Image (cartoon, rainbow, N blue to C red; front, side, top):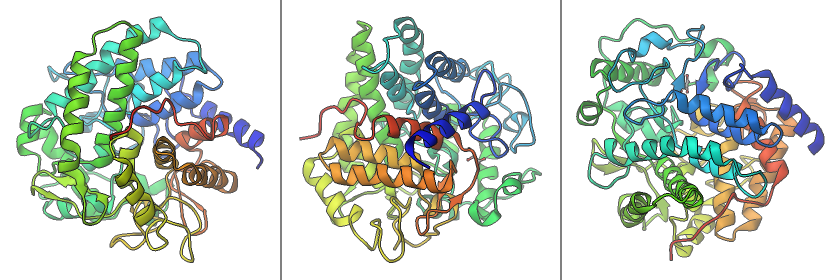
Amino acid sequence: MDNSELISRARCVLRLNDMGEFTRPSPRQYPHQWNWDSAFIALGLSHFDLPRALAEVRTLLRAQWRDGMVPHIIYPTGASDYFPPPDFWRTENLPHAGAIPSSGLTQPPILATVVRAMSGPTHTAQRDFLQEVFPRLLAWHRWFHTTRDADGTGLPCLIHPWESGMDNSPLWAGALDRITPINLPPFSRRDTIHVAPDERPLAPDYERFVYLIDCGRRLRWEPRALLEQMPFLVQDVLFCSILHRADQDLRMLAVKLGQDTYEIDGWLARTHEVFDTRFWDDERGLYLDYDVRAQAPIRANANVTFAPLFAGLASPEQAARLVVEHLDNLVEYAPGADSQFRLPSVAKNERGYSPRRYWCGPVWIQMNWIIAGGLRRYGFAAQADALVRDSLALMAQSDFREYYDPRDGSGCGATDFCWSAALALEMAASPDSSPHPGELKS
Ligand code: DGY
């Protein structure tokens, strides 16, 4: 497929999944609206249908909870054959929940970054739209920095692996191992009907996902109780980097709208202050996730370690170590005898690496986009170009799949997958641009 074919096929995938008010991530596997999927989808749509892109964002934010959370799955059209169905979450009639049926969890807040990119130099400023969505984005970010702050750092805690977006990553293995899923509510998995079981989470992981939903609904999704009692409580490098970057983009939107930036400046300063202490491992030259319940770093090497570059949170020295010691390292992430395509989601020499199993090793296009943007911000243009080139090659070779086997580039998971298509449009339009890079840490 050449670039123009790829672009027209990508548009078709976004149209195929257009449900009118929202875009489902893929036809059978994910028939509802997902939070960060919708944000990436809006970015893709903005390349050829800006009004539809803005509608995607509006539908997502319409589901915002009264306390500020924007949920991870939204069911605007009710139940389907997807598990969990809307009533499984027991979020209806909670005083702090929203008006649209939804899950009780959230997802990585890439939305402010997308909204800023859509109102950037390539598109006409949408002042009314910005005025409408800005207060909602601000409320969501405030919710992360306060309601999900368990330790005074302002770094949000995640209460379920689904909130990270990286459901069965080896990052969560230790925390999930400590959980015994007792008295599970009756359920039957639907995710292995349309996707091969060996590309999906293993049964013990999935049981723990369901167990954690049950814990949340018993606590009536009450934020304080969740922080105090959920058996899974972590701080994730990718999530916190996306939030910090989104705080920067939200600040730019505030400036554009003539709004006060005092509160956002406070979040930015606080994250800068605590990020290294919480996540940086100077001995290994890696950013490591943190298990808040165990009060210990999570020692797994996953590609989230490169995400702080996207947020300008690394010093030039830290960035150089990440690139030289890890990204370009044949044993960990660089293509070599055992892999052809960048970037495995988990280091190839990491325990738990499994090149076709969901978040245990496959290449994800949105991770490549985030990491390429970060590399470019730090001047690693060759490495960023390689990530974009590999992403476009994977999609040309294996179509718009949910994830790809880094060994041979074969497609895995859901088919006609929207965020891959959306980011193909973004990468093909501006292969060498990171949207609005900002300051770096000195
Ligand atoms: C799933 O159903 O596997 C999703 O990742 C939940 O968000």
